[in-house]
Image (cartoon, rainbow, N blue to C red; front, side, top):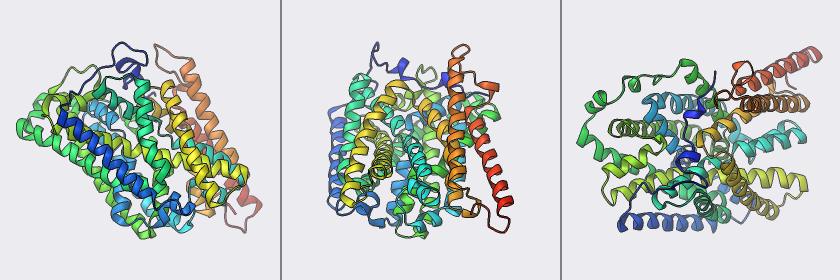
Amino acid sequence: MHIPLQATYCLRCTFPLNGCFPVTLLHFSTADWLIVFAYLLFLFVLGFRGARLSRSTSEEFILGGRMLTLPGFVMALVSTWYGGILGVGEFSYMYGIANWFVFGLPYYIFAIVFAVFFARRVRDSRLYSIPDQLYATYDRKTGLLGSIFVFFNSSPAPYILMLAVLLQVVTGWALLPSLLIGTAVTIVYVYTGGFRAVVKTDILQFALMFIGFFLLLLFLIPEHGLGFLADALPSEHLTVTGGNSWQYILVWFFIALWTLVAPQFHQFTLSAKTPQIAQKGIVVSVLCWFVFDSITTLSGLYARALLPELSAPSMAYPLLAEQVLPGVAKGIFFVGMLATVMSTTDGLTFIAGLTAGRDILSVLTGRRDDRSVTRYTQLGILFTAVLSIAAVLVFPSVINLWYVIGTLFIPALLLPLITSYYPRWALTGSWTFTAMLAGFSVSCLSLVLGHVYRIDEVPHYPFDIEPMYGGLTLTILIYLAGLLRTKRTHPSKPMGV
């Protein structure tokens, strides 16, 4: 079985690196531009205000002093976790309400699992990051390997790409300058203000992402009604699968396991004032995601009904806005899309920078004082930005980036991380290191072979098995072997001890 990546949006065709056109899809009035500039100005003000309180200790810079209240937790987590707005537009345009069953339902399920089984344990650990948990539970080499995997799993590259695309649709610039400018705008306040800057800007972006799409529907529903969709859409757009196979839908449920190893969930949970705030905050966040998924999916259905012949479905939302929104409303909607992407970009850039600087470089150098940790984290933020731009130039497709990251790093991190919070089931450091490395290696090898042996430009994976399945299966087998060996060797001890 294969996820049909050839059908996903690819900037080699739509927004080429050396390309034929870059185009301007949204035509702005002066008032629209003023709205965009006002948003960016307010964003910088909030970000730099957060910087004033974030530099006293590394705990302040990394976790905001662990003082995140319920409203701040919800708004920051909702906006940081939801960044793939152009991918959502594409999928809902192409497959209708299946978007909710692919990018909504499985993530709600695993978010609730995280809230029930992990949030309290994560917060009670009083650590700083996922790698801290791996170091504390296993050993140095396992922690370092896990840190490298967490760094790549935190990559903001897909969202930096989407941010560049949004710049392109209003400016007509080429991809590279759009990447450079979009990245620079995003990291400047993160570099200076750390976690508090991320949270303060996320609160603004949370409000704007909802306002933008509610505003779009405010122009669509009174004009066309809801019954119009049933008549104008292909029948499969109103089915659970959207015309895809159930096996295809199931693949995305496996990819949603990402939630359990998502650095955003751990980072915000560790920053919450209490474990109860973290648990309640995740549940409330699920409700917010349900609302936002509903309005974005509905918007995608209107795009398919009103613009049935789009050659670039990833541009469904911008092109729909161009057709139905007047000046000012168009600027507000664009700012809503921009906020959706930027909130995820800045959060992941910070987390990846923290991992590279504190959890890898600081460990290797042995310098763990507050000043060194903050400085290394800032260097990690810059390194993350540069590496993400390079990744985009190699894989200029958002869904491809999602797929590659999820395929390679979920098998390696899933069991080592979740069992670390339940020591009875955790293996020794040596067994865990082996499982992590083996799971990653098998997934990576399968992915590479699939792309080497393409058939009609479609990757052909060994035995027609998705690379993630092979890596995850091998990791599970190693865990079972390790648990059985531990039980035989120490029958009187709890497993994993």
